[in-house]
Length: 285
Image: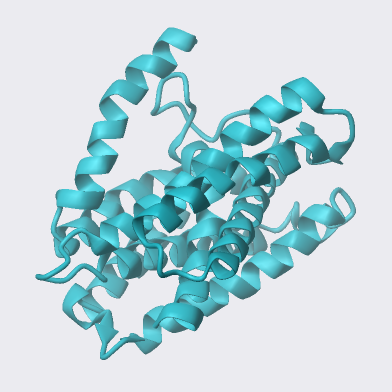
């Protein structure tokens, strides 16, 4: 398993970095469609693990929505004089609202499952609310690159990823060493409050990097945004764990040997990216 994880990481990490920093934004947006369709097929298993028709109908529906977004909002029109395109803004705001609802579902699970576990329609809607705002946020942040600052948008995407990776790594090691108090035992029994706190502390490394590279930033704001993004990433992780547990699924897929599926790799980002994008719009645009 460890060997598979390392081999997958060896080819996956350069591919992700190359796309984030060197792929033109327009190509990036279309390349993401393929990635999110794999994630959509995996979400289809959450809707109904035994029905291929249900899984493919959800995937095709999401494909139509993603293609429509790319056609209706070309990369050149995502930002206009510092304002996010109304369609992208609406989807991102909807994503922010969804994660507030998802937090309630996670906190009250398994009671909350009575409302949605048997409903294909609700689980399909939850899948769209999880994936579409993440897609839009990725394209929006990447599109902030300009001719004078060609890596700026990619750097913002990478920054969110760094926060998520720092939080995940810190939570893992702190949880292993100090974990005693269960964070959400009905959703993910292995996660602990001590692990969560350790993850949040670890993200301060990212704050230090940001303040070193951009010392004019207000430290208090950078710390607050980092912590809020990290908390959102933990919610994204717990949300996917909840839906997989309800569907009796261990991994969302097998396309990434040793790592599971695409959803398993982006679960934290599905919440962190929309939340960070909304914060960025509020304080920096």
